[in-house]
Length: 157
Image (cartoon, rainbow, N blue to C red; front, side, top):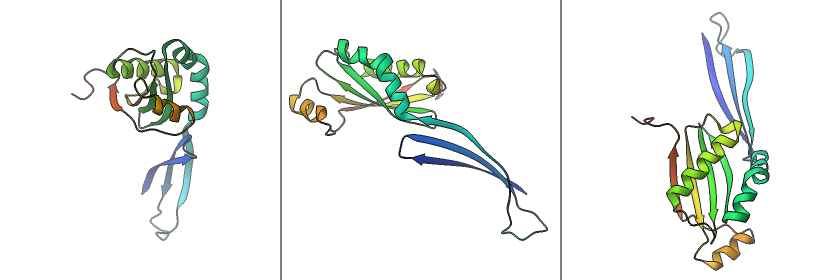
């Protein structure tokens, strides 16, 4: 009897690796003997590297010109997880912001091109100067909104 198993491994919350392993349980040998046939690393993603590339290519424009920044938190099961920080220059509402940045991340990074959807966590610093001070000094603040974006139409139907 051949059994196949998927494994997800997380290393420092930045590298995701999926491994696919097949092994045989021989009928003639005891139940504890397992012969490993294959170990194939299918996918590896470095979140910090993607964030750095995004910061240089796209995010710098959004930060300086529009008062908006974003970073990839994780990519899991076809879902992109983004954190977006809004400042005073940004005028669009949460829905428009979530959609614009979700599609921007998906289209500008080949690792994310097959994503099914995006969960967006929004920090709004437009009204509260104290929160802006905390955020600038590396102290995390609670999210003001959570949004979801599905990339394919009629996917849930």
